Amino acid sequence: MATLRQLLTFSIAVFIGFLGGAVFTQRHTADAAAPQTVRATRFELVDDSGKVLGAWGRESNGETALSFLGRDAKPLAAFGVDSGRKPFLTLSGSDGRMRAALRVGWGERAILAMSDEKWEHRVKLGFLASDAPSLEEETWGLVFTAPGRRILAGIGYGKDYTKGTLNGQISVRNSEGKTWRAP
Image (cartoon, rainbow, N blue to C red; front, side, top):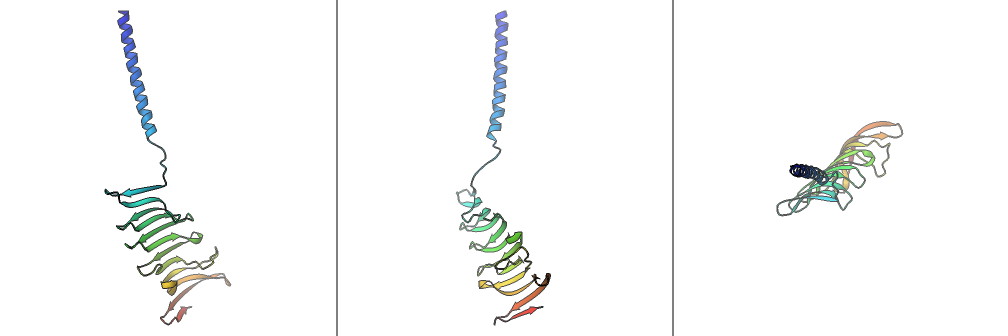
């Protein structure tokens, strides 16, 4: 009887030990299989045939972006940070050329640019940086441009450095190159 009792006790101990080990292993295997961080240089979204529809990663121009591609693998939309670590949002036409862009640019100041298939930056709204911008510069406005970025019309304000005041201005250029300004 003692041998049967010892055998039963041993069997129960082995079973409970096996059960505890299985539960422990299952729990720790699940924890180990769920990584805390996933690292990669690029993620791609593909369709059923393997064609890339979008990507999230670093681009060849230094931008890190979430991009969506059109039928011809040309970019249609992108959201990310540029090589200077400033945010941007770009929308493009089916030809892959920019149609609208919102950027935080020089001095952390925003600019919205709109284009068409003929030329980029046809319309700009926001901070209008000079060729050599400074942190004191306060030139904001709405500008309409022609090819070569020649300004055709604009309204905005800028800083008069001699007086230290902000002044509004409106200007229109005609086809002969003559400009009307007020004030």
